[in-house]
View 1 (cartoon, rainbow, N blue to C red):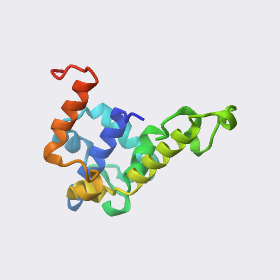
View 2: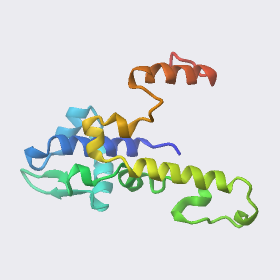
View 3: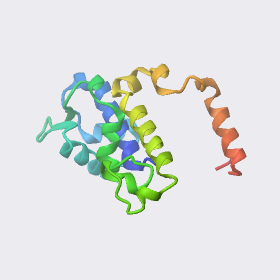
View 4: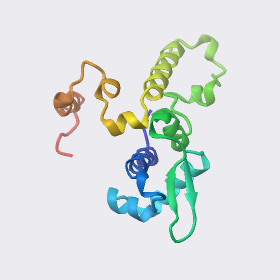
Length: 166
């Protein structure tokens, strides 16, 4: 699973709306300016969030967007599913069911089912509020400390033969 730019922008927008919710409806231009994001791309993402019922919109002079619920009532999985469609690690598990004719004899299916469950459990148990609060106990596995996170990433890139200067 790789989260697209739409998914990353959706999280950024939702966090921005939550952090500025006392300001009423928030215009896309304000979000774009604060977050240094493309207005055109934001329009696409926010339209998806609006159609998915995660944000509410108001047209007009004082129009804009705000969250449809409290930040603690959103989980990261539901936000990403709006933009990504599915968070399944393989094609045959998309749409919540096994759609492969070879499922009965597939040796790797248990692996993909397990990974799908880990992804769903992990993203489903982190709220938008957890991200805003920086709740590292829920966000990062215990074996990863934020201070060592960059070093861990660089080590993994080097071990994978990737150029660290990119």
